[in-house]
Length: 238
Image (cartoon, rainbow, N blue to C red):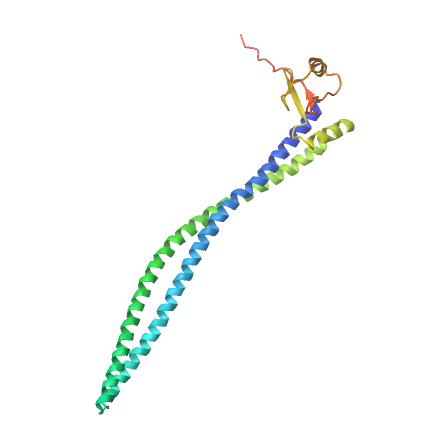
């Protein structure tokens, strides 16, 4: 039974390592999600900034055209001698001036919007840098831990082969069959209870387990039973 316990010890380490290997990427996934959210917010703000800047350039272009247009109108004003044509020309200049005033307001509003978005971008970039640093650090840490676990599992797989070779084939097959349904195939008898399923074990069976006569299984969960060796008492120096 000692050899089976040695084998089970290796199997338990491997099982625990496998659990850690599955959980570790979840930690990175959470940080990656936060980083991606920060990235999306920053990119959205940058797109909005580009939109405002494009709008500003467009209105500035229209403003320049209107200013050039009104200058041309002013230049032609002194050439007009007909009263009706003069009034129509003045009205066209007024229309152009109103267009200029509106365009100037739109340019000023675009400048204000640009300043606002730039402030938002600065905040988003700070969060982005923080999230990226945390994600990269966590990923590097997890990569190291996973590499360590991989090396340990590989080493313990070798130990498992060595220890399994010391177990009689029939007993090994029974052990492996039990481990397909439960994690620990070999458990102690505690009092008159199975430590695996906590069910009562018949006294006669407990006695046989204690005597070490053969291999015995729990009648309820089919785990292999053993009785732990009593703890060694330390002798007080005197």
